[in-house]
Image (tube, rainbow, N blue to C red; front, side, top):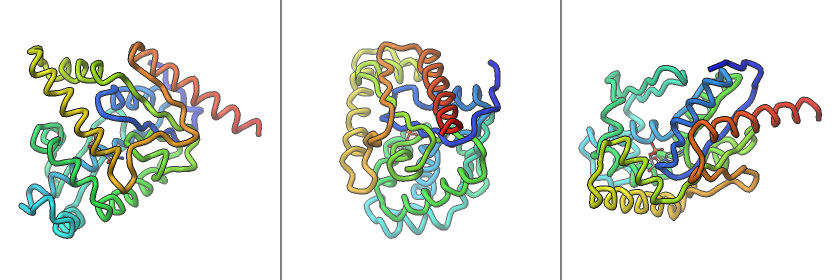
Length: 233
Ligand code: DC
């Protein structure tokens, strides 16, 4: 994979879960020689902090306190994942069922979002070139980003992909995954604070019939055009 170091700016990559967003974001960052920030990993790490504090996830004040008292670190190197909570490596734990079930209520707490959004902006400011993945990056976190992408795919395709990642083949388990995806999407789209939706100026990319490589190439091309347009203006 060739590294292009000419890209300077911010690419936001938003969309629901199961679209291949993380793999695409990482590949785009590597191709452009850019940093990569997985904001979902930040909400997942915050969820670990809330779970370990033993607070009720309904108690917004207690959840916020638990998150603000924890030391959460998420790295920005596209080639090396780093996620720690109070110095403990939680890279595997944050992808597990316990955290996946609990992350929607935690990420819906406005004070938690304010804490993490401030941290996201700090991390982005440290990079000349960065790909930032999440749900509200183009709409809320970086409204002035160089290029905004909203990645979607049909729900059945998303459930199949998730099943492939988890090694699940039983039809009833795939149906359960699809139901879980829909439940999380609905929760993320309906929440009052920063709901999941494309920014008005986002390029919507539907990956239903595209390979991951094709999606990556499309975004890299758009990034190069966006920089070219910026230089000309
Ligand atoms: O992308 P992911 O599945 O790792 O995200 C985990 C959860 O965090 C998901 O339910 C939505 C939430 N999230 C969010 O609310 N805002 C973001 N910028 C990123 C993720």
